[in-house]
Image 1 (spheres, rainbow, N blue to C red):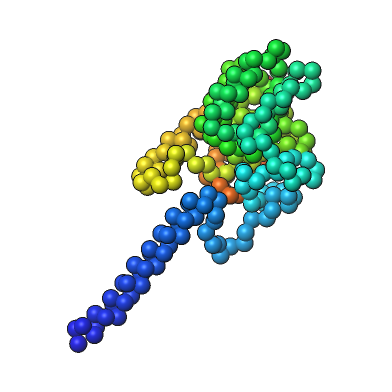
Image 2 (cartoon, helix red, strand yellow):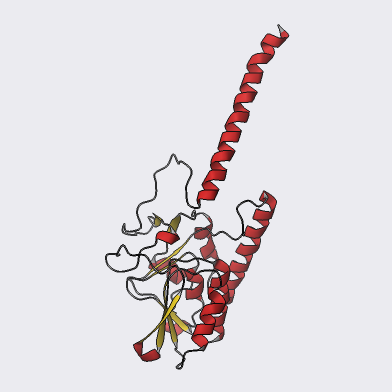
Length: 251
């Protein structure tokens, strides 16, 4: 009788173990695919091209597939690393494209080489390297640059940290600013306790940076609950509340 009673229990335990192994394998595979989401029982986020309304601000998103801006958005992607273009007789420069590793130092060097120092940095970026965005943002603030978007420009993921660096920030109604979770570690294969430590350290650095730039770090509450393959687009009221948009009388 004892073996007969143990068999059902053993089968249940075996089934649980197999399920855990399969779940672990799916999580591991999803991590490696960089953007592959696990199945969800809830409704998926709408397309990025769908209109944004207060309370309905989360959209599907991948930085490596971010379209160029415009109304409507063209299908051609933005450059895969930041490109510097002088516009408006040298008074402004456009930083356009993804923020790649090494772009912080590289773009600061390119700006230094300009024959005429600009006063304003226009941004159009799907995001990218957080550490490079923070490095370049500190350089832009030290140099006293203004930052801005144009109608149709996007500033997502790590790009808002560049936007935050401006001594003044101009965001037209047709510009779009969005945040989501970031990867701070160098490898998805790190032990869990090391990965958590990297994330906490990175988030702490970002919040300190935002505070230094005069942005309310509470904006990170939206980033922390928005997966990397989605983007939370800030509406004008939020941009004003968190300090991205300021009135002239505020300065």
